[in-house]
Length: 197
Image 1 (cartoon, helix red, strand yellow):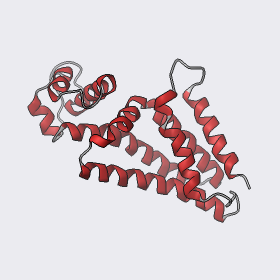
Image 2 (cartoon, helix red, strand yellow):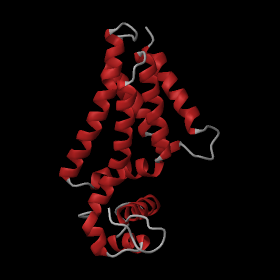
Image 3 (cartoon, helix red, strand yellow):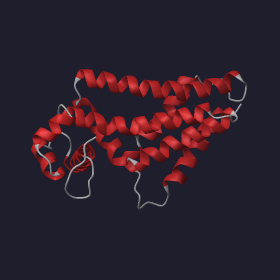
C-alpha cells in the first residue's frame, strides 16, 4: 500500500478506516458523510475512492478486518495439537477478547449492517457463517468423542455463545469492574459448563 508523505507515514487506507471508525462510532454510519471522513483522514475524495469504492465498502471493511483476525486465530486454536476442550475454551475466550479489543467496530457493524448493499451483506454473512461453522466443528468434535454432552445440539450451543459475544458492545465498558480477559474467562467457562456431560 502506498504511504503518505506527511505526518507519521500511516498508509492512506489505514487512515481512512481509522477516521471512518471514529466517526461512525460517534455519529452513526448514516449521519457521517464521505466529506467528513476524508477531512478527518486528511486525504482527498479521490484517495478514498481509489482504495474504497464507496462509504459502503468502508463499513464492510470495518467489520471484515476484525473477522479476518478472529478467523485466523480460530483456525490456529482449531488446528492446535491439544485436547478439544482446551482448543474450544481457548477459541471461546479469544473471540470475547478480540471483540472487546475492537468494540467500536463491533458496535458500528451491528448498528449499521442493514446499510450494506445486498451483495456486501451476503458476503459478510458468508464470512460469519464460515467462522461459526469452524467453531461449531470444535463442539461437534468434542460431542463425537464423548467429551461434551450431546443433550444440546451444537448449533444451539454456538448461537448461545455468540449471542453473548454480539451483545458485548451494548454493555461492556473498559472502566467497568472486569478486564476483557476476566469477561472472556467467565463466558468461556459458562460455555464449557453447558457442554459438560
